[in-house]
Image (cartoon, rainbow, N blue to C red; front, side):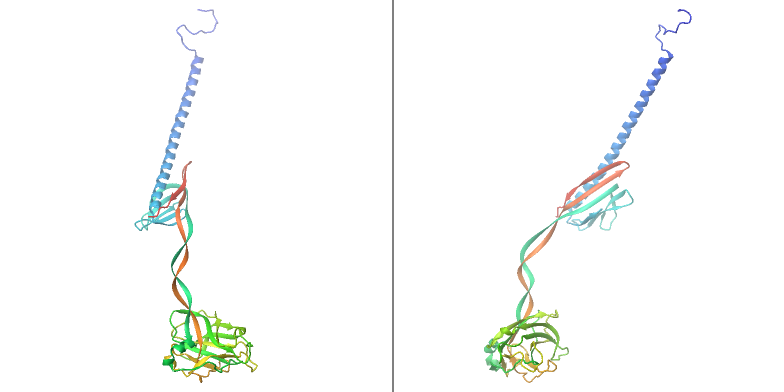
Length: 377
């Protein structure tokens, strides 16, 4: 035994002091706490990894289903925003769209059937249609218009039919277009299918005064209704330049401008009216003379029921004294035909669908984006 009052010593049996025991207990508690935090972190990481894996799997399944539908579709109806629609090979319409509140659900629907869930927890979804336009030219039959003689009354007709028409030919008629005189040619029973009258030709020459003092105005009228043989509605008009009219009988063409866009009705009556551009003064403003025939049985003439009339009061009244006398004229008509033409087309091809899909559950986010090529069957 040591001296009285000296400190306690560890026994030879190897025991621990109270201080050592307390220190060891504190260290053990710290190690236990650290282990608890470590296991908790490992567990949370495992749970987060599982949640991310679930989102990734959901995104992959959604994209895989869309890819299958797009690649087998016959055509894409539309792709914009968060909606995609297409025609399936069996003729049904497949539609992808969003529903619900944020986060939304991606649904798939066939025609008007039940909507099936494709993916939940959708934070964002965008579709866009990718196309390319190209032009190509091909020869094909296409509607066109062509100018054809609508009515013709000319010396060539007379020469070929003199044996049956019994007409007396007069190559130098004395009719002149004066300041108030109008020469009108009435025609009807026109061929069907004419869309309008683009031009009129007449055989005239300068008379008494060369060059002519005024241009000649050519007008085409629709006759009055109920069979009245008078001009009514102006359809087209043109001009024969006075400097183009010489001293010999020649064809002079007036290209017409449409006043009223009206198709020529084969059952209606029409008038071609030729007048001087000048009015008043009592003098011959036009100084032109028509080449004509007379005393012809128009019923046997190749142009059905043509007649020649004149007015000396600006069309207020018309004289039929020369009813059996015919002027030489040609009337040209627009007609619709089918012609082989080079036609340029624009074709728009669908390349595919671009998509961007974002899924979010809690703090976990899965982002998937890409392009799905369209392969039409």
